[in-house]
Image 1: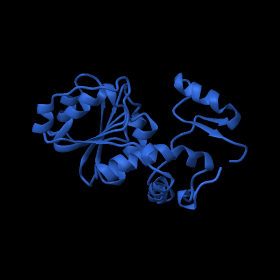
Image 2 (image 1 turned 30 degrees about the vertical axis):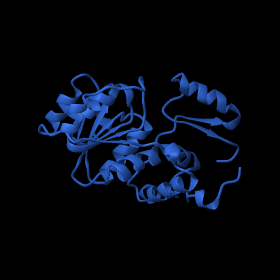
Image 3 (image 1 turned 45 degrees about the horizontal axis):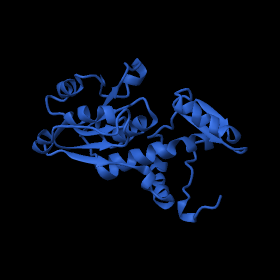
Length: 225
């Protein structure tokens, strides 16, 4: 495979090739939505919906690097060690917006990064503080959503869609160059890799992920690591 030189990014020295292969999509779309679009800053409250996934974990680490307070939102309770990574954790049930406001003295979140989308869109929108930002990257369970447009404009909310597929090779390399030093200095940690799959079994690997059998990360690799 031939790629242009501008599409190449130096691998962080502290990461193996397998680890480096696992960070690309998660950290590019996390950086794109959180840093470039929402412009998350120090002291802001970031609510991350879908913290168990690789994108949610990337957003969590980047938000902490930016000096933000991070609230993790998941379908199931986190373990004590995982919950310790957050300033607060909530379940993604019907009472989510009300309970998030209780954690933020009635204000809501400055940024909601919704890595689930679809079924969570309306609740995510209701979690926003006045004049604050919602980032959407997915449409789990529903590609069409509804919400109260009066509430939307009265709250002066901002909505961003982030799609890393729109990035070409050079743009992706630029984002990876931004992220790479944060791995080498220990600020960021690579996702845990559950499986490595030989390239010859790539189709089976994708089918396993589609069936929910592949674990959080499945890496397809060739003969060399």
